[in-house]
Length: 146
Image 1 (cartoon, rainbow, N blue to C red):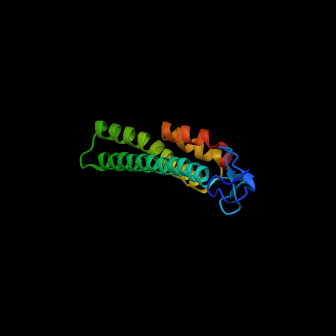
Image 2 (image 1 turned 90 degrees about the horizontal axis):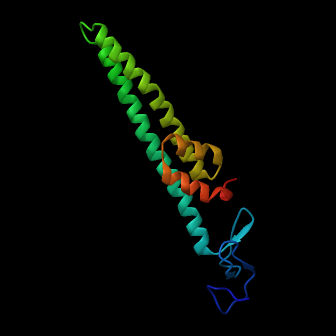
């Protein structure tokens, strides 16, 4: 078999994803599996996109949680705040706390995806930030995590 990228060279392996022959120069080993440069690039792109999407979703939830907590504190400390103001403050704080937790887990999941470690955390970050596209990318590339 010949290298698909250098026809004058003998192939030393076949890509595990597309089956093309690859020479020593073209061979990229990922988790002890030989891949051609094109498949290695494509693999890397999906997981990177999933990680970035998780981080964006996490930042969104973190900012939302901070806004809710800040508004809750503002309504609770308003001069002359009566019962309706305190009720609004409580509601804002109740919604703000989970937003902060979701944001933190989304960011942690994004970092895990970018490092290709802890697939479960990366998946949880995608689920908790309601990030369907990231969820699909992570499901497609489960085997590339350590």
